[in-house]
Amino acid sequence: MVRNVLGSVLALIGATAAVWSPFRVWYDGRLGRDYRLAELFSGTGVTAAKAELFGSLVLPFAAAAVVTLVGIVLRSRGLVALAGLIVLGFAVLWMVRLGLAQGSLTVGGDGPGLETGLLGAVGGGAVLLLAALVMPGRKRRRSRRRRTTPPAAAEPTATVEGSRAGEDQPYDEPTRPIWRRPPDHT
Image 1: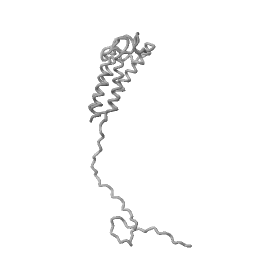
Image 2 (image 1 turned 90 degrees about the vertical axis):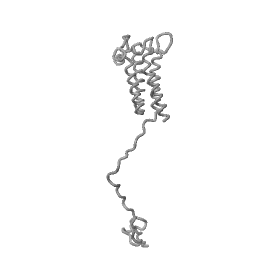
Image 3 (image 1 turned 45 degrees about the horizontal axis):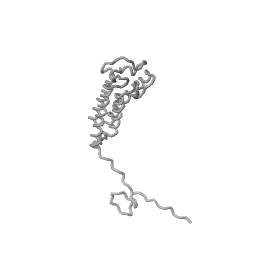
Image 4 (image 1 turned 30 degrees about the vertical axis):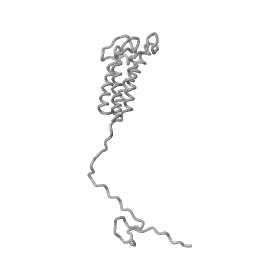
């Protein structure tokens, strides 16, 4: 119970950080919501063109938040982990595409560099993955099918004396032959 609550709280924190990150500065004073989602998959890479809200990085992070909420409701570790991978995947893809367009990436410093919005996305994705590890997941229910046929009776086994188990037979009248040692011809 405690692990489920802790995992759910961590998942909500990670999803909130991921959804909030596009509204913060990502690189060179530019918000994450200003980057077009289609530019991550184009040959030109990231450009200076502005994006519409749901045509930007907000869309995959909002989708990851929805997947997280469904994962919390269903107590599914897999869905929460998938949401974390979506967030991390798009953040890393953005860094790769921006690095190709700019020639290099820097963190902080005097010039343009990676900012807190990207940190929120990477941190949110990492917290989502941590939440998936913490969550116990659903317990598997055992199948409770009723048997339609009675269980097969076990073959009676021979006792040391040779009689079948459960039968009332005298000791000296076995139902099968007892193995006997061959006569010694020395």
